[in-house]
Amino acid sequence: MSDKTFDKSASSSVLKGWSKFSIKLLNKKKSRSAEQHLKLAFYEVHRKFLKQYQNHSSLSALLEEGLYDCLSGTSLYVLLLEELGYDYKIRETDYHIYLLVEGGEANSSQQFLFESTDPVSGFISDKKEILKREEQYQSAWAEDGNGVQGIATATLEYQFSRKVNNDINRYQLAGLHYYNQGIYAYNNHNYYEAVSSLQKALFLYDSPRIREFLDLTVSVGLNSDMDMAEKEKIRQLHQEWQAAFEKNMAQNN
Image (tube, rainbow, N blue to C red; front, side):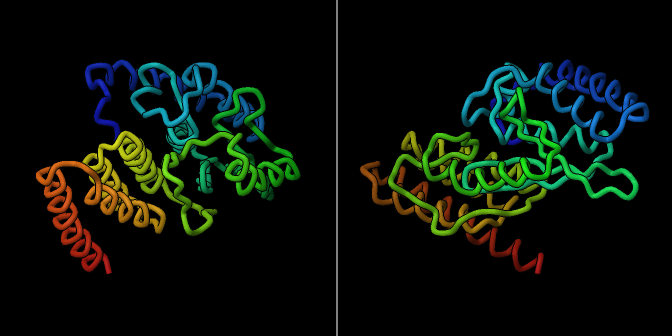
């Protein structure tokens, strides 16, 4: 859990309810085709857990209040798909996250798209419609600003230098939660907290855009009108992190 605001006292009740929900869905798998079962799972999650869309919502907001965006909603679907035994791909674009799910049936290559932010038509099985949606995620959302944006953007006139269109794993997905927290803190001029969150994000997901934004945040913080003591805290935090990060990278290589 990347959200430190999560109320641990409520976690037992949440986990118990989730376990009961997922077991009930798993028991229905044998009596349905993959498409029928996945469609049921998609809409049952929305009905029971994803109550209201709120851009850049946290995991705690989802679990405690039903508030979700593409990051938190997709994270919940990932958990369910693993419990139900389906393979999936987590797709990352500039401002959005979605899922491609494998049907898992013999002699079938069919995929299903899970769009967690669409409670009405977010389960897509038609190949042409899947391609259409993917094209939208890679272009229109970023260009006109009117699409669903679950991955945060900075209020500065900052544009990431590369386009993003990747498959990521669940650990990298968790890293994007920290990335969102970092940009939220940056937009509120809390540069120390932003640097801390972005550093955590990079340990989970060594992404060029997270590296780029961390460098920008450190630079903006050190050149801001904060007092010298706060700037020194940022400088020391970043130096310590760089040493630990480089050591970790060397060990992994």
